[in-house]
Length: 106
Image 1 (cartoon, helix red, strand yellow):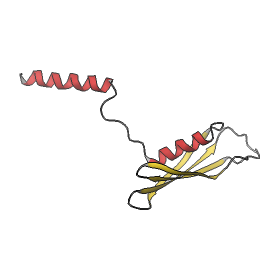
Image 2 (cartoon, one colour):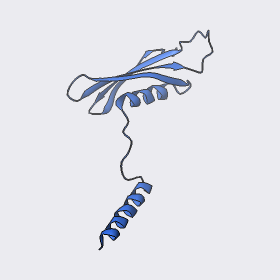
Image 3 (cartoon, rainbow, N blue to C red):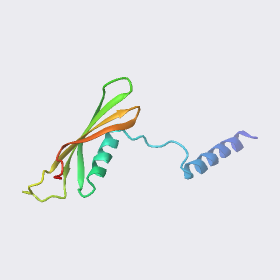
Image 4 (cartoon, rainbow, N blue to C red):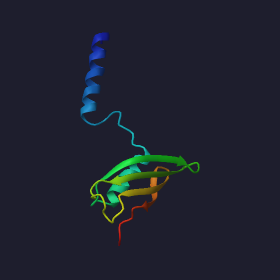
């Protein structure tokens, strides 16, 4: 196969694999996953995430903190607008999730 043929073959294979969803994917941080978990825990709320942090607490453990603001509440609402959560990950698996601020009433 000529050099030109090899380049065309590799390019076509790359385009084909990209169309199939195989290839480089966007990595999602554990703090982003914690934010998604907080939004899923409060599906009735519209939340804008304002802060995401994470830190290692051991060889395989990471604690992520997220904070946000509920945009679905009018000013002066008795419900808290600020929300926050903590997520504990072990080997990239979510082990503990807790809302730490803005917990909805039971």
